[in-house]
Length: 351
Image (cartoon, rainbow, N blue to C red; front, side, top):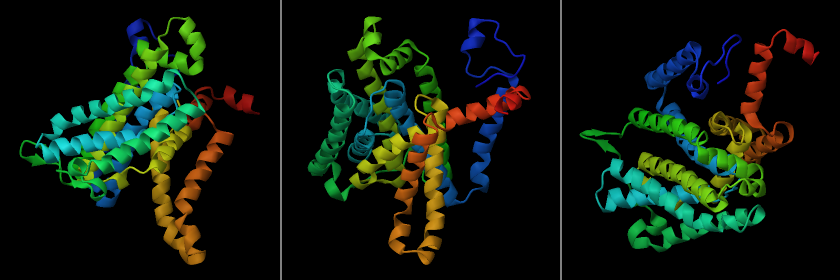
């Protein structure tokens, strides 16, 4: 977060703190209070929307670390979500594990599969890496369909709701709190990961991998670490998704969603933790807007065109951001804050 005028850091600890001023603590506390009170005023439909946004934020954080920070473009992110989802589904539904024990195992399982498909990243890059990750998605889905006795194949499999003692997360409000808590922890973890030695190495690899290697950065190790971390996040998101619906099916993990997750990064701002949140929020809310407007448009124009409105609107928004604001919403928000912080000099500069 940016500091106000006249606020300076006096030591290294203050400079490294994520929350630095009383005003920032106050805003954070107000944000938490709003999140806690939201189920009291929201409808079930609105709780479902915000829960899906929370799951998308977790997944996009993983893609942001892999693609936004390390520069390893992945188009198979949803495939790794499916790995986490089915590992948790099998552990809880087939073996009777607790959700809380299955969640970290499923996340690690997705991370290990990510490591396997990340192995070619040292030898290939750009278009070829994109094709390799696309192949990863289809291989994972094919394996899930073939292991019918274990996964239910194309028919899918029921998944129990999470339990904490005698309490079952079977209401929309309780699951909302579970997802929001996980999204908050994943955000804090992502912020700290990018500030570590590994996070700085990711940025160096993204900016110029040859220069990073000359400086002593182990490309192979750090690229695999990025794949592992990104897929762990995807696995957690996949687990939360199937336990929310109480059912696991390959139809929940279509390839096109990997494209949209990458679009969320573009809209929010690649290589930015707030950007990952803003991008997921923006495109998910756009989907809801299209859902509301679609029936109205179908009465005024061709029904087929109205049905394609979601795809058209997402594609149009992503294309506009690529042309006019490639650094995303986070950069635009920083520009707005800087404008008011430097007032009235910013106004003179604009003129």
